[in-house]
Every structure is written in C-alpha cells, then in structure tokens.
Image (tube, rainbow, N blue to C red; front, top):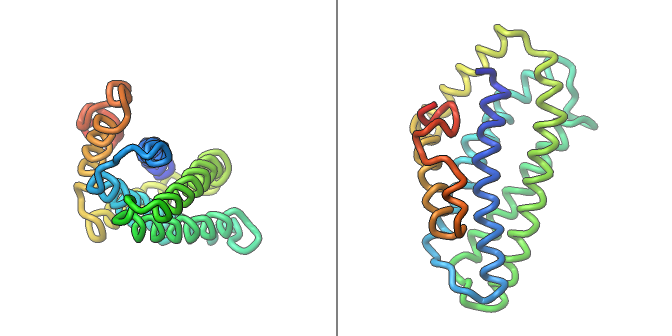
Amino acid sequence: MKSIDLLMHEHRLIERGLAVLGNVAERLHRNEPVPTEKVTALLDFFRVFADQCHHCKEEGLLFPELEARNIPREGGPIGVMLSEHDKGRQLQRSMRELASRLDHPDSRAQFIAAAQQFLTLLREHIWKEDNVLFRMAAQVLTDGEDQLLVQRFQQHETEQVGASVHERYEHLIHDLEADLLKGAAQAAPAPGTGCCPHCGA
C-alpha cells in the first residue's frame, strides 16, 4: 500500500464524518434536538483523526518530501493546502466553543454557519488533494521513498495519536451514522470488515 493510498483511505472516513456533520447541521436548522455528547464526539473525530492524525502526517511528512522534489509551497499547491488546514482548524475551534450552547438560538445559528463552511472547505480540499497534489506526489516519489514514508506515517500514529486510532474512530463514525443518519449505516462497512487497510482489511 502506497503512502498516497493510505491518505486517500483516510479521506473516505473523513468524508463519512462530514456527512454526519451535515446531518447535524440540518437537524439544528430544523430546531430538532441533537445530543450534545454526539456533537462533541464528532468534533473530537475531526480534531484527532482528521487533524492530528491525517493533516499532521501531510504537513510534517508528505509535504516536506514534495518540497524537496521541487513542488513549491509558496504560490503552489502545498501552500494552498496548508492555508486550508489552518482555516479548518479555526472553524473547528468555533464549533467546539459553540457546541455546549446549542440550545441558544444565536449559538445554534453560528454553529450551523461554521459547520456549513467546514463542510464546503473540507470537501473541496479533499478533492484537490486526491485529484491534483497526490497525483503529483505519485510522479515524484520513488518506490523506496514511498515505503519509507509509509513507515514514518505508522510511527507518527503510534507516537502521537495511538496505534489504534483508525479502529477507534472507524467505530465512532459507524456508531454516529447508525444514530444520526437514517439508513446510512447499512451502506457503510462495519468496523473490522475491510473498510480500509488499517481496520481489518
């Protein structure tokens, strides 16, 4: 499994989390109750899995390798990705600050707005990486360099977020889908059934 394939598999789980967030925003817009603990758990998924696990591997490991091979940061795709990561973190902070006050109309409206911005940002961001930057990476990394990068990805997970991070958050998203997306859980693979290379493939 190549490094880019691993990152793209992570994108698929992040997209499932985004679908849950979209459902939460729709429910809040209709003034339907959403359990605070489920919102908090979903935001924890974005903070730990999407940011600390996924984005930090890109920023600390993949992007420097690409820069060393003349894919530019300033005025290039890497700079755009980094800027979008920062914007996503700002929106996450806003949502976390508002999550405990969703029973207040103003806070609810601000949360919905931040969630919608976050959804648009990450969906477009993932498309750019999958279809532009990762294709560039595949062209410049040798097989040996790529396998070393895979090993460094695994080391990052073990040291920074825990070796079981994929399994833990795959279970969480599956449970949130079952609770919040009517019928969506049936379409998603159950944890440990080959959903991705980390979760029992």
